[in-house]
Length: 192
Image (spheres, rainbow, N blue to C red):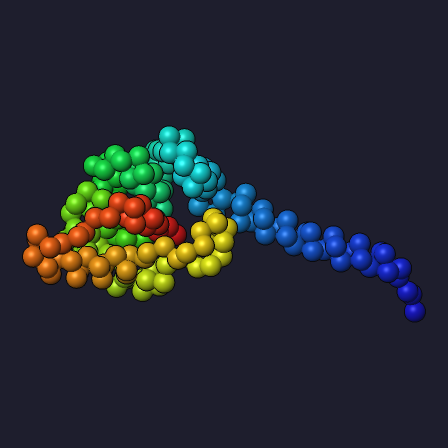
């Protein structure tokens, strides 16, 4: 019977683990499963970092070559929303929904757009449609997402906002409190 040195076994185990991790990193971070995916991922990084100009440029490049890439239309719409280019943002949300009328995240984010521009009935409709298509959106961000972004408190979800809007819209117009900019700014975007 041949015995191996413990150091050799540890080295083989370590290299095996590194090989597996490397493969998955390559598969899910480098290898494109959808044409344009790497530019799309980089654009998302820019979007998350608040570098909207560079994000928009990358999303436009992806969409110039891959016009049916609904996730890129959504990301472009969110970028334009953050840049307060509301009409262009609406066009991109509508394009994403046109490609997939069951795309809950597009409805959720278009609801946020409608909310920001004062179209509260339309926002409520989009929020409810998003929640009907994907009830998990009501849960909002999990603890890991909040931890990685250093957000200790759970931000309001579209379900929270929809319930609030519905209650406020039932009141006489003079008694409504629909906009609270400090709270509204904490609403997160919905992707994936």
